[in-house]
Image 1 (tube, one colour):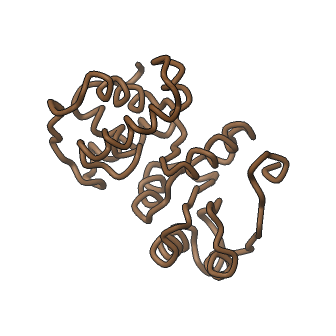
Image 2 (spheres, helix red, strand yellow):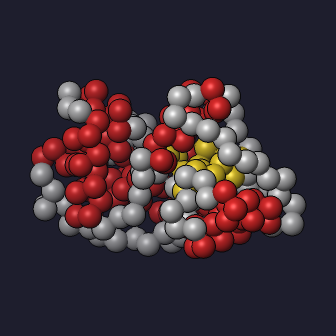
Image 3 (tube, helix red, strand yellow):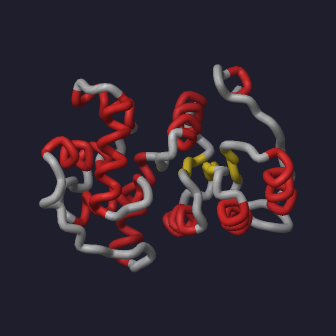
Length: 198
């Protein structure tokens, strides 16, 4: 299915985590779609090795096990995204493209669980980030990221180009000191810009 998409080529497959790491060293892919539960080396450990040893390779985790602890473990291991295996083909393709652009892709239905895990547990660094340095447009972008919108959806909502959205996202992440979309969502919820159910 991915091979049929313009601009996407599947260059290899692996049967387990150790083979996945070895194949990444051999093939140097832009994106790895990683399962969590594999023999010999699980997906979290494999993700940790790939992102540490091949920083130019991005990892998108695809798993039937979408419990909060798995999402957090994968993101902490360096994954750039996490999707449940029941996503549509279109959602998978969009996530691959989003991760390739350098932003994170987390299924919107997992975001609330991720936030609850963070707030209840302390699994991710909690920071009271000052937001007074953000422009009005950057604040709008942060709110939309907090609602789980992709760059394309943000561009449509604000009637601006996707490249302009990407510029705003880059500036925004630097100002609020976050690495990816998942951390930005947490900031949006912690600061009350977005509330569950919105």
